Amino acid sequence: MDAPELNHPYGQKAKWALHRLCKGHTIRVEVTEVDHYGRTVAKCYLPDGRDLSAEMVKMGLAIDWPKFSGRKYSHLEVPGVRKKLFLANARQTGRMDTWHQFEDQQWRA
Image 1: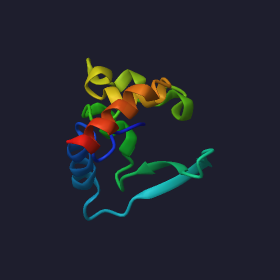
Image 2: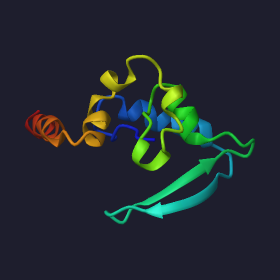
Image 3: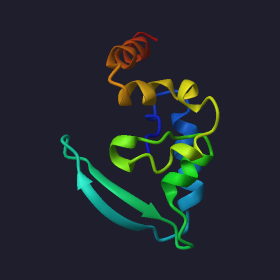
Image 4: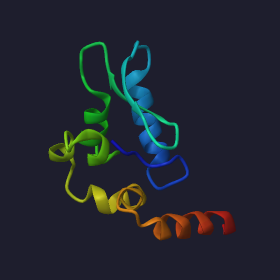
């Protein structure tokens, strides 16, 4: 899944939703790979077996990232979420010009 960065629209909301899901729990992590930037890619599960990525996608605070999930979460996406989380979608679709324009505006604000 792909969630917004903290300084992007809905970033703080996504952070606190994930915090509420995880607070007080031991999370089981299954590392699946390390991407070409050196970031760990993993599947994360709550003690009751719920998949954290699925939960975030169902809440509309993350989108499926087919490159890593094989479209496992795409059917859980809420209508309009890719427009709402346009920067995460831009990252996935290679439209980094949109990403950089947003970042530049943040620096000027």
